[in-house]
Length: 139
Image (cartoon, rainbow, N blue to C red; front, side, top):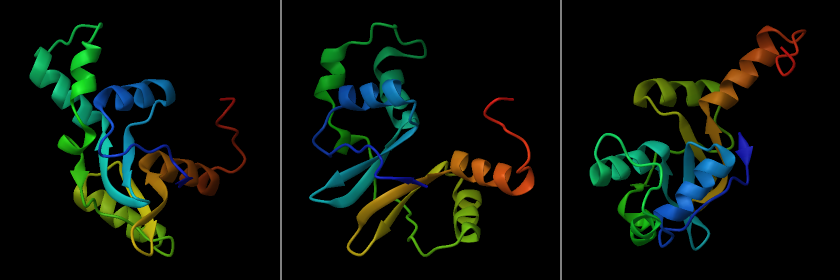
């Protein structure tokens, strides 16, 4: 999992989300309020809003004013399914398969975010287990 992932607050806007998505290549960003996980916003959520406003082919110069006026809380998924640090890889696989998710927040205690697990993280684990002799970074 990715520990201490980048986050946004419910009061942030989609322009903030766009910047994080583009700068870091994220597909999911946890939404944290008062130190607790409040939801998750995905690249799909962002594209849905852009599609609703601009149609199927959004202009490259997306109206930043519009993105600045849409709050994260209006598009995020509230109360997402989460994992605990003590959950197993099998638990994560079951959740990914059942729900067709690509990222799951990891929380402890009173919904304190400790990380996010993605399908990409699981692929990296499979690489290490199934082919430890191959250096995939240079391949």
